[in-house]
Length: 145
Image (cartoon, rainbow, N blue to C red; front, side, top):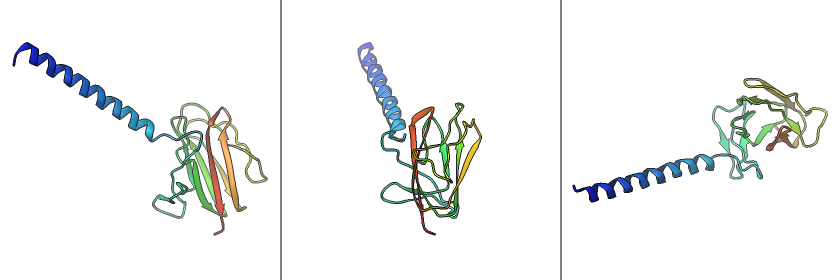
């Protein structure tokens, strides 16, 4: 192989590596939550596997704050279920209902590894966000047992 061929091969290799790195970076952002729509993933406390409906709502009682994102932004639970939010970030977060109710009140700020729990006894849809990071938002849909 002459110097010119070797040079072209190296340039092609660098371009391919750059394209692969860009694709990997794009794929990483593709899995993050669209903060304007707040889609969710999760699992129900009475279920061993995550289930998801065509609408993207998942049945779970666990919500994680991770990477300044809500990992399960739309969940569905049965009336009487306790939902637990866990902070996996180094920054403090809270759970702030869009409209507070007797059972769903704003939490205090909680740090990494800490949790906040609410038992939902009333059927309805409850929206919430993190007040220090208002783009982190989600909903809890409570349905009859």
